[in-house]
Length: 328
Ligand code: NDP
Image 1 (cartoon, rainbow, N blue to C red):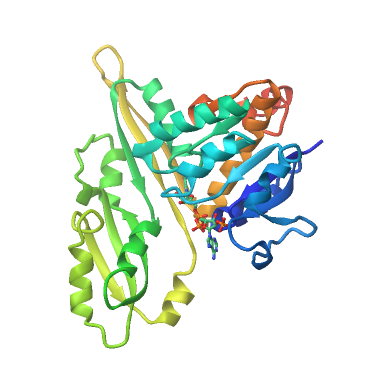
Image 2: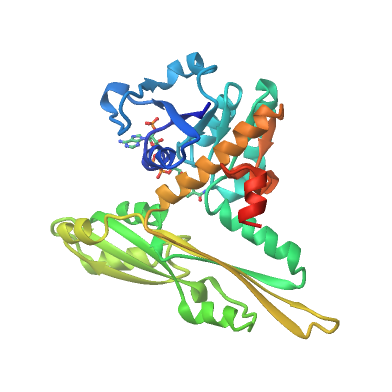
């Protein structure tokens, strides 16, 4: 029997999950749930219902894993504990500083419901976190580096859109090549925020807006841009749509370390991602972890987990025997 998946929240990740399920033959989409009027939400998969979130409780026995696709800022802190009482759940909660608090809330709820909740799944947090952990465990005497990009930062794009005179905008975070090379050369550089990333902004102005004033306001915006070298390009609405409508992202996790009695030998571990679509990739990771949640639940386990707690074989549709034969 295939694993019955529910999608809760149908935005970028929700759509990505739907695509990912199509590529995983041991899974099927059971239903999509939304807080909006379901009649206004059209999905791709034929024959699968779109329901209101208020009906979710009626699906307790018809869904093996509910993948929560709400936003990290306000949706997931409430939704994940709420639904972990009823379903095995997966989320992509990415507010790093609040993960311990979120973990505690989901753990209590999932134990209450005798369910599994795997939180903060994706690439950062997610695959990047795993690679940081592996690299640290293997090279205790070393230094970590994470670079992001080139990619669209939704948060920074939103911040620009809030500047007076801006009609629309897209912001790319770009790693600085020379900094990346210095790390790869084993120089162990101490890098400031400004030395690691630059920010490039493509901005469509409102009619009659003062370009110089908008540029100044973006470049000096605290927390978002003032600590970075920022370039601002003014473009037309058509150009923004034509050249900047994708959601690419990616980045690099590196650790350089030393071994040997006197630390005479250097090593570099590098993991990199180059993603055409951040949400579709993130969704693919979520779906693999949904398989793990299903299996843990079948074993009778409950409570909250992160990517750190899940053994890799649980992610794969292949059997242990097949994995040992083909991938070890
Ligand atoms: P979206 O803004 O596309 O969707 C979030 C929610 O908004 C949806 O679930 C949907 O819920 C609601 N929504 C309301 N109106 C609309 C509408 N008109 N169209 C689409 N959705 C609507 O966010 P993303 O899917 O891009 O990202 C979700 C979260 O994933 C982010 O907040 C981010 O924190 C996290 N993330 C984590 C990553 C990681 O590596 N860990 C990587 C990428 C993202 P409803 O259907 O109920 O209205």
